[in-house]
Amino acid sequence: MASGDTLVTWTALCNEPTAASAGTFDTRNQHPVIDLDADTAERVTFSAIMPRHYDSGGVTAYTHFAMSTATSGCVDIAGAFERVSGCAQDIDTDGFAACNTLTNFAVPGTSGYVVAASIAFTNGAQMDSIVAGDYFRHRITRIGATDGAEGDMEVLSVEIKET
Image 1 (tube, one colour):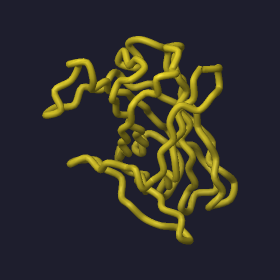
Image 2 (cartoon, rainbow, N blue to C red):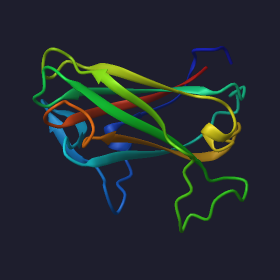
Image 3 (tube, one colour):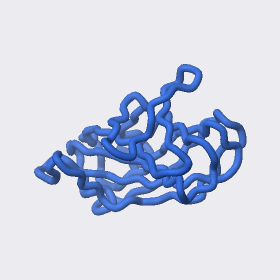
Image 4 (cartoon, one colour):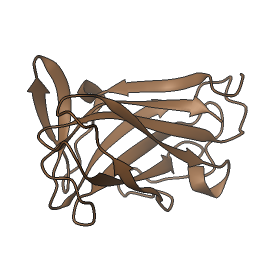
C-alpha cells in the first residue's frame, strides 16, 4: 500500500449512534449528514476492518463536512481510534485511545460548501495499536463548546488514508 492511498471510507449513513453525545441524522438537499451541535461535544462513530494491505505506517482521517449556517469562524475537532480485535477490547465498554485534536479549522465562507479537515495519527498508541485485519472503531467529535462557529457542523463522510 502506498502512502496517501485510501484504506476506508464511511458516509453519514454508516454512523453508529452512541447512547450519549451522538450527532443527529439529518439530510440537506437529499444528502445524508450527521449534525454536530455548536454548543456541546457531539460525535459520529464508525466501524470497519483495517484492510489487509495496511502497512502499519499510521493514517490520516479526513472529515468531509459543511456548516448548516456558519460562514465564518472555526471548528475544533477530535478524533480517536479503538482496536476491538485480538482480544483487545470487551465490546461491553469503550476503550478509545486518547484523542488527537484539530483546533481552529476555518469553516467554508458559504454555508453548504464542503471541506475536509484532516487529523494525522501515528502507528501505535495513537491508533490503539490497530494492525491489518483488525476490527476497529473511529470516532470524530466536534468540541462545540470551544470553537467559534455557529450552527451545526454537518458531517457527510470520513476517509482514512495511509500516511
